[in-house]
Length: 141
Image 1: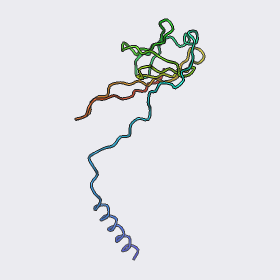
Image 2 (image 1 turned 120 degrees about the vertical axis):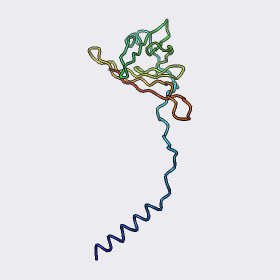
Image 3 (image 1 turned 90 degrees about the vertical axis):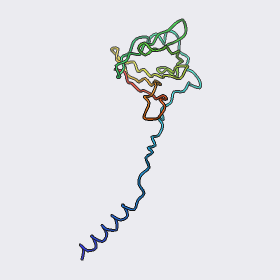
Image 4 (image 1 turned 90 degrees about the horizontal axis):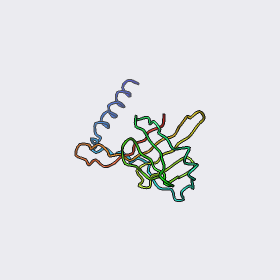
């Protein structure tokens, strides 16, 4: 008797699954929540404070981030790409004025460094779609 009830239940479930509409060919991928925005109130950083951050940093993706200054202006450059003028967002984070990158640098003892770089890079075109842009996130090592 139990087997008969179980078989009936399974057949009803099988019909229900078969009656479902086929899935759409469209795949929806939510946009990245990460964005690069300029700070509403930039952090005041003196030239001397920025001096501690001026150097080359190795990134987890094999690229190199360089922070440097020209006069009172702060800049960042990844490898040989264009330079980006920076504004301090906090005591250890910076945002490019063109909103193409942001960086957080955690300086530790014995020259250890942590943090991450978020950078806008061209996206690779998908079948039939435009290239657009995407965000690259790389950590320091």
